[in-house]
Length: 198
Length: 198
Image 1 (cartoon, rainbow over the protein chains, first blue to last red):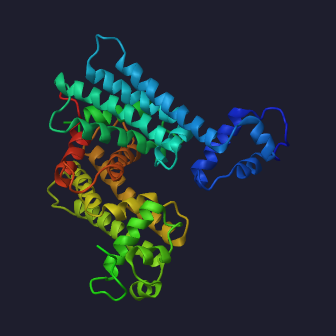
Image 2 (spheres, chains in turn orange, green):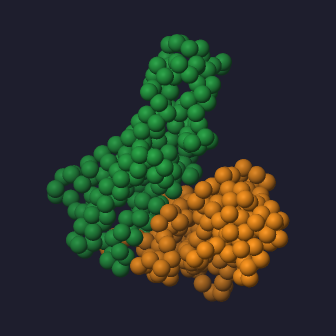
Image 3 (cartoon, each protein chain N blue to C red):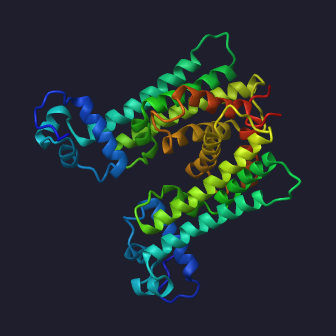
């Protein structure tokens, strides 16, 4: 298939954003220009600027996509049915985080590489820390109710849990042998029930 | 403290390698030149070349340091006392991998960022895959002896386990509140025994 020309129907902001995120992930955000994106899509730079204000706006939109998804997943787990335990909430938060990661894999991959090199990145890191704090609060509540082992610091548990979740971006690909739902349950089973049978 | 001048005693190959790995990790391997390293150490470029053949040689030495450590840890676990179970071997492999990671944190951090952009990187990725294969074989043996849950594919278990281990490079720093040994035991406890108390 040859690349579409400027103005070809079907090229909308969403398509431009998807390709931008792919390029940011494969060749790095700093190394990617709007010119690269235009060439990749077979569009002119001015056609790109018809859809998006700037490269920074694309980064911001992608990071918000990942952060909105992860935030909603954690908030939903926190605000779930008051009758369930903190352990069940935490387990839900882990499973939902895996689902968000698999559904928004390119955006989450980009988020996890952010190092704070610009205002947009600093703001994204601040939102990541808010999410981490909520997770640590959930871990602490589960330890307090006696459902989670207390020989590990809540901060360490939270980091190990989501270190495992986040490592999925290194190898998980949609359409592979493991479904996103099975993977979500596997990650939670490993973390909460342990791998050993005894 | 001011930077030492060329030929100052105490600047040996090891010191040059340590600083090179720090620079590779903070500003990226591609973006780091021998000139940057010389400036950072307060040496001339020719003084650096007295210690090391090339930038590639520094990368190769750092990756070998990480890979030799991880390989030895896994091989020691595999070849341990024949009286122990595959589960005990796997648990030892996880704990020892954490210890190697904490002892060789900059070199392992560098290794985990390698994407195969040169012959040296391709060779390092091949060695990483060998280590991953050995770990997957250990997981499979533990499933076969009935000591590890069999509702997760051995490859997935291996990736999740070492995804968690490798995520430590994101936040673990020597001298922090958690000792390397306590961390190694915590990671193994989470993975094998699970976080839930029931």
